[in-house]
Length: 381
Image 1 (cartoon, helix red, strand yellow):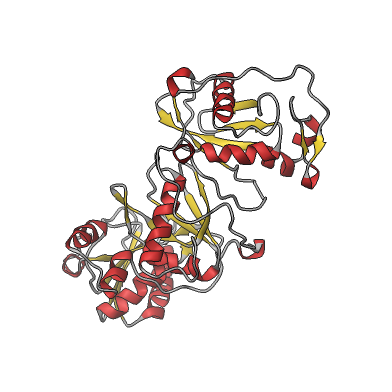
Image 2 (image 1 turned 30 degrees about the vertical axis):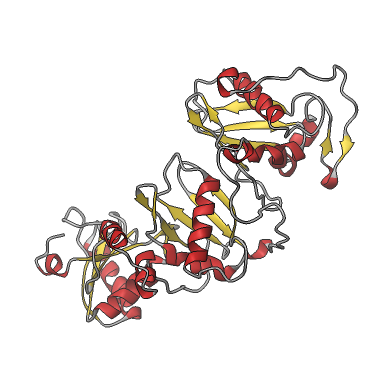
């Protein structure tokens, strides 16, 4: 249990907690005891007093998690009052949440992300409905001296972020490993952007990250730097290649971009190791682009529907260059659910690939990759 992690639980310092002390925003901070039901019935307040805890084994008893995290917070001096800061926990097959007695201690607990527990590293982050200011947490490994603090001071960033621009300042990141540490990923990407000149001011451009088992989102301090991050598409990370796209809610202009490897080549930074990774990341440039997530089997189930898709996609593809031919496999044929567009030149196909990669269709990011021209002409899909 706790002793195996090098933690010791501390006894409650008081028996009868004092009355709550008002905090900014009307959220009470009690030096002991549980949050009131009236406070937790307000979803905005509840989101500030709850923390999402990922990777918790579903067989874990809630009180075991509560006792463990309380002891950990005492150990690294994150407790702001007397007694234990965590009142209760909810654990299900997919989600776990810990409820705190104060918003201040809930924020402090974010610094424990990555703490080892029952053979896994816990992910500790805000719930998805949190609407407060951005956080700049550390990690358990940094707090306990296992790794050095990240380059850049996240705790003193006097950045005013406009909530109205949040969507254009966010980027969807795919292929993130399930066991990835959010702070480590942010530090890696911030360093990568600085190395190739994608940041537009001193300091880290990424100010927040939201992760779960299905998706990850990065929030940037500026719209321009969010657009620049699209140039990191296919960057190698932990034996995979990350994908960067606009979120499905984005309705702004198409931002031309290139892959990470194309950016390195442009800056003469492409090494032999990069070339190997580039070949793993996708096919080499050709005049043919394969598009995914743009058509459904239902749309192709009738002849009329198939003709409409061919007509619509011919018009869309022609926006980016001279189209030689379009192939839309019918339902049940090889390559169905994909659309193939052959352009007159690699220059045109590259423009199309980059443009489609930054767009979404029916809420899903469009998948655009080069396809072998030889296989296309042979109809080997």
